Amino acid sequence: MGYQENMLPIAQKKIGNKVYIITSDREHEFFNNKKRRIKKANIQNYKGVILIRSDINFELVNRFVVFKNLYKIINRIKPDYIFHHDLTAPSLFTVLNYKKNNPNVILVCDSHAEHANTAKTIISYFYHRIIWRNILRTRIKFIDKIFCISPECIDFVRKIYNIPGEILRFLPLGGDISNIDNYNFFRNKYRNMLNVKEEELLIIHAGKIVPAKKTEKLLNSLKFVNEKNIKLILVGSIYKEYKEILNKNINNDKRITYIGWKNAEELSKIFCAGDVLIQPGSSSAIFEQAICSGLPIVLRKTKLGQYLVSKDNGILLKKDDEREISKIIIQLNKNKKILKKMHLNAINFAQTELSYREIAKKSISSARDINH
Image (cartoon, rainbow, N blue to C red; front, side, top):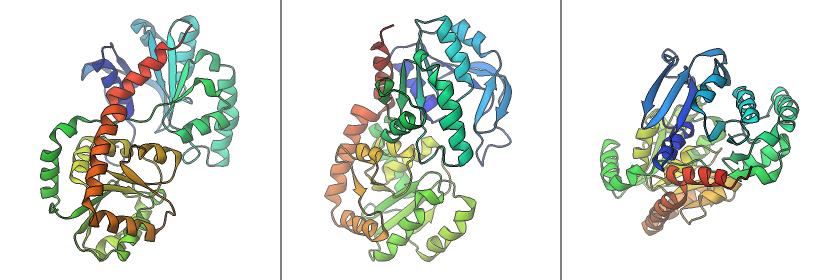
C-alpha cells in the first residue's frame, strides 16, 4: 500500500488525528495481482489507521465499486472531516447524503483528472462534461473544498465540471521521506545490486511504461551520447505492444538495463541509487516520490513540471526532443556539482513541502479555514 489514498491517512494520523480508511474488499487490478485482488471484508489496524474493508454490491473493475452499507459505516464512525477520493465515484452520493444530514461535517474531495488522462473519447467526454457536470451542479454546495493534484487538474475541473475556482486548491501528491535518513546506505546497496560504480552516471526512468511516457525518445537520445560511464535503468511494467519497440534499443546498448516492476517501497530505495530521473513524457505519481528520495528530475515542460523543479532541483525540457535530452545527459555527466546541488535542493523541497506529513498538514489546515 504505497499510494496517496493510503499514505495520506497515515500521515494525518501521525499529526494527531484519529483516522479511518473505508475501502472495498478488492484492490485495483494490476498485471501481477489478478488472482489475489479480492480480500476478506474486515476491520484492521494499518499503521495506526483503522482500515475498514467493506463488502460491495457491484464493481466495474478499475473504475468504481458500489459499497454495501456505506452510510451505516460512516454514521457509526461519526466523523468531523471526510476526505472523499474522486469527484465521480458512486460513493460520493452516499457521502453527500451524510453531509446533508450532518451539515457541520467538513467534506472535501480530491481529483486526479486532467485533459491528458480523462474525457479523451466521445463517450468519456459525454460522461464527464454532461452527466457529472450536471450531477455536481446541484450538489457542489455540499462540498467544502476540492483538492487537485496538479494545476492541470484545476484547469480540467473548472472547465469540464464548471466548478467555481474559490473552492479549488492545489494539493500535490506527496512522497515518503523516511529513506533520506539512510540515503547513503540505500545508495550504496542498490548501486552494488545494479552493478553501478560510484563514478558512473545512473539515469532512472520509471513507472507504467506506455507510449505516452516517451521512453523510446529517451532511449534514442543515448545514440547521441558517446560516454561509456553512463547507465540507464528502466523500472516498471512495459505496455505489451510497446515492449518490442523498446527491446531493440535495450538489446543494442549495453548501458541500458530493464529490471522490471518494483513495489513503491523498493522503488523509493532504488531512487536513492540514482543520479537523475528523466521522464520526457506524461505525468506520474513517481515524480514526487523521486524528489522525496533526493533524486534530481528532468521533466517535460508542464504547469506541474514547473512546480516540481521550482526549487532548482531539476531541469525542464524545452524542445522535448532527443538531441535536447542527450545534451542534458552530457552536461550532467560532465558537471556532477550541478547534480549535488539539485540533490540537496530536492531533499529540502521534500522536507518542507512534499512529504506526506506536510501534505497532511495542508489537507487539515485548509479544512479548518472553512466556516459553516
